[in-house]
Length: 235
Image (cartoon, rainbow, N blue to C red; front, side, top):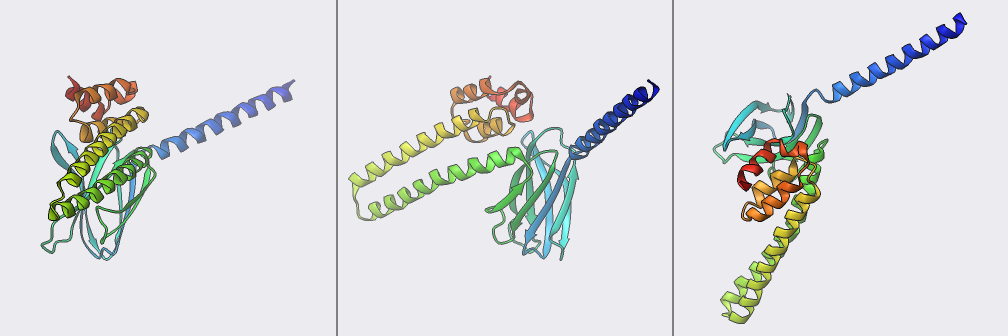
């Protein structure tokens, strides 16, 4: 009987030890944002990491790059939000900027000096993954409109008024489809912070759409930074 009790006690200790290890593992993964940024081709410059609060940018940190183009930045976020990465080459040229949706997780970002602000790879953020898909889909709409604008320009030179009107209607149609698509995309992802962010940045022209998106948000997202901002726009 004593042997059986000892066996049960040891089994319970092993279970408690296993739970404790899992708990430590979860805490380690959620300590905060652990950003690893690499900018290929960058030899010298300054990276400024900042976020937007009440229409004003707040600098979180800055790094001087001198030969090593890899940067590590750690920060505890209150909640997932958009973070901006300014690149100043200190050569009199304009500051370049790019952004990503940050979360309290390990995030790896790769970009290049040549395509900074236009081409970026982000791994480790669920919100950013949703945001990248959103950007990719909108790029297709925008490319369609660029083609139509080019055709419109050519028709202006040839004074083809009938074709100009047709192209104008096509552009209006694409704009409408794009707007509705973006609204539906926000609603489909209403359990993520990126949903109200899309609403306040790209859909502010329609209070009705904003209200629809706000009513679709999960309770947790309603109380988020962008959820609160969306509420103010709806009221």
